[in-house]
Length: 348
Image (cartoon, rainbow, N blue to C red; front, side, top):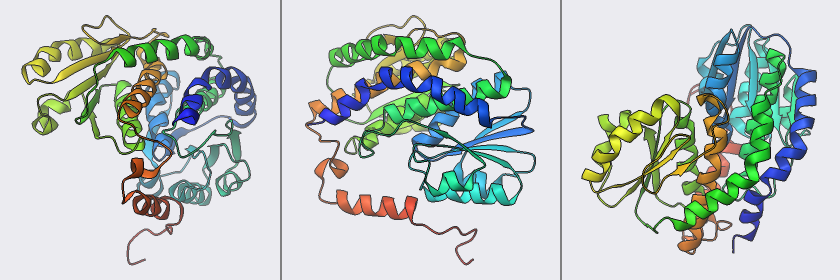
């Protein structure tokens, strides 16, 4: 059970080493000057743009926004814009919608997809092709890291600079995955709702952690901003629940200060940081500045999800872990994401 999922996670170092040079070459051929940049997608394909948004903003002297595909399509002006739209399949309705509307607005469009024959690739001015997925029914691991690599390759082309951190990440991935599995295996088992909290670039990592739990048979989890948890969602937490604190650099101190409060609430705080962490946390290698944190943070979250699912006997290939309504939920998911029409208002 879940052998393909484990293969998906373990294949990432070789995939990154083999695909980064190719994606760099593709990006160099398609990325030119940009007036402003919009990064967009849905699901993991949104979380990856959010994870690199700060990196883009610190390296580019132009406006950069990472938005959901729906917001980008229906609420964002696209004049003088380079739009980077992510969809692994190239068939997600909202990705196709924003590519269509951007094209009509005269924006430059770049697709990141594993399907170069997809409608998304056809609609966009240029495409950066990702490595093919192993299986899309899994909690996506290698598709996410491939997307991160493609986005950074495009940024390199926009700024005319090669980032050694991207190579360092690929080189350290195997060791970090081993470290992550050892860490996750040594954590105590826990079956109640799991929280993922993050700040700055770690906010996207918190989103990613929760989404992996949801994809793994619907394991109960939620995410929030580290600081905003204290202003509302704290009231939804309960004693005995784990809370993973995704924090790097400037956010690490705030997370450490909050740890006693979580303990006072009877929760189990676990730090995932590139700084010194107390208790059962994991210390990640610091690639350089805070903007790179999500690249390292995704591996512990992948290992944690896999280990928890195995402990609970969940087969990740079966919709919602085999619950009787799982097939129905999957059908609705496909209808919403792949077959929905492009309309601006319900009555349009």
